[in-house]
Structure formats: structure tokens, C-alpha cells
Image 1 (tube, helix red, strand yellow):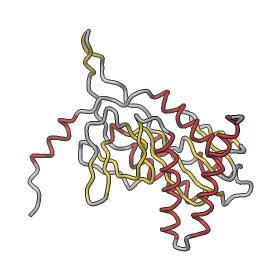
Image 2 (cartoon, helix red, strand yellow):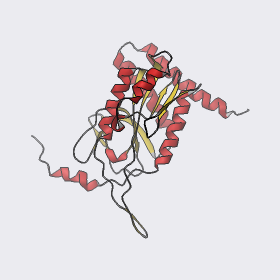
Image 3 (cartoon, one colour):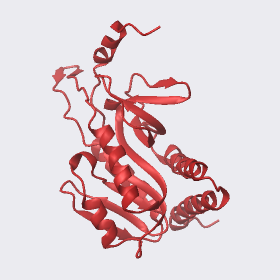
Image 4 (cartoon, one colour):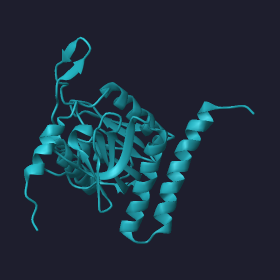
Length: 243
């Protein structure tokens, strides 16, 4: 058998695009259709991200008791995160553990970009602790809080062309708190924005695979999440719960 890395990478995208398209064809209810699309993106990340990362649909909480909105795809640290809450079928992740958050939709348009920015902003605005890091020779200073990657994942685009000025204009709105950094439109290509908010649209033949590899590269650049102050969360144990 003659192996081909080009074929492997191409087939990965083709599988994702076909499953997204199948979800769109198979389900009539918008909510069910959305859940199916979300599951496709989650499975991609759960399968191919290094095991130090996990991806799940969740809420994010900070040590001051603030919660984010529900996020379709949260990429978070599991190697060093001391706790993840599961309650009544819902997952809640401490803000310090989060690397990236993404919304998963059927199509990208101005409303969906604004909606995704709102969701991303609800996570970035949460308070995050960062403790000094002990080591054999002493203590490293607290790690600066890293920028949480935010983005939008879709199958199609409601614009024509799918990657063009309309998308660039939509991505340029908002500020640092709600900027979208990385996204995939599986039928057209990927978009990425730098620290200055300058966005690049990349038409590419296999966007889902390109998105996966770019996300992994960005995660590698971030190294490890800050050391969480678990005592900041423990103080909520003094709260008397209502009966």
C-alpha cells in the first residue's frame, strides 16, 4: 500500500464537510440541526487535539461567581486543571482552564458573527487568577493571562463570495474583548485575525483540516494555562445555600 499524507489530510476535511452537510440535510428542526453540527466539530477536536486539551460544550465560571453564556465548543486544559464541574447534564469549567471558545453554526453571516462575538466576550470578560509557580530552585512569577482564542465554525456562508469584503467588515466590528481570531467555513476556507484585529481570509481546498492544524499551532504557542488559585473558589463554600 502506498501511503499519502496529502490523501490523509484531504480525507479528514472531506469527512467533516460531508457530516456537516448530512446534518443539514437530515434534520428539519433548527435546534436539532445545530446540535448535530456542534457534535461534528466537537468530535473533530476531541479526536485530533493532543490529549492535554479537551473540547466540550460548556459554561465557564470565574472565582467571583460570574458565568459565561453557554458555549458550543470550549477548548480547555485537562492536564493541570484541578476541577471541572458536572451538574444536571451541564459542564462548567473554571475560566483559568480555557484556551479557546467557538460557536458552531450552519452558515456564517453578519448576525452570526455578532452572536459569536457576544458569546466569546462573555468568556473573555471573566476574572482569572494566576498564582506564582513553585519549582525546585524557588518560585516563578505568576504567568501573565493569555488571550483566549475565539471563533466561529460553519459549513456555508450566506455571502457571495463566501470569503469576501462582507465577512471582513463583520469581523472588523467589536473590540479586543469580543474579537473573533480564527474560524472555518468548511465549504470555502478559513479566516484568521491578528492581535491588531487585521483579518486574513484564506480560500483553501480543505478548510476543516487547515483550521485544525492552525488551531493546534496557536495552542502550542500558548504553552500552559496559568496556575489557578483554587482557594479563590473555595471561599464560596461559606455561602449559605437557599432551602
